[in-house]
Image 1 (cartoon, helix red, strand yellow):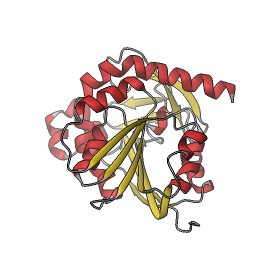
Image 2 (image 1 turned 30 degrees about the vertical axis):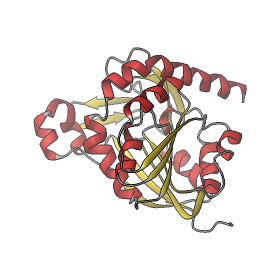
Image 3 (image 1 turned 120 degrees about the horizontal axis):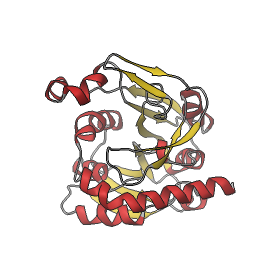
Length: 260
């Protein structure tokens, strides 16, 4: 437990240190999220106007703003004070509503403070692989969501994008995965030029999905989005390799039976 707390603190320190650079790079939304990640997330979430949505690890608020544009009432949380400052500064006009809150999603008591059966949906966009411990969060979703509520997460695809020292691209035709089956921790850059490498947590499918199964959820949606053809043609060196080997996986989970 002490080790997890120490690693978690390091994760927070790195994201606070990288926040200004990250916000400048991503802006209101970057290409990967706009054309690959977000469309798949929105498809599986299927937001209805007026629904209350919990977003964990909201960063500078890019997806929270997208959810609000769809008419959702969003509680967007992050444990980086610096990223939250930038999220608030970028949130001006939305069709729905957004509340930003400082919250550590590895701490059960902080998660419990959000209220039982308070959300129609929950979402974690491209962040579980950056979290030191996901078990408290997944367990909490089973209490935070309404009956038949759903949560959706996107991650770098664990089958094809494990730690950089373990996965080797073979030109644009394939990947050589040398070490997949065991969970692992290493340092990665989410984007080229990132000032400080951040801890990255590789979780194979048995671990990632198993955590959700143990919390009482069932998997009822899975997408492996690839870049649209025009983007592959426009920037082939960057995007062509992902046309047949997805770098993102998006899943939807539901808790079918829940006591109110």
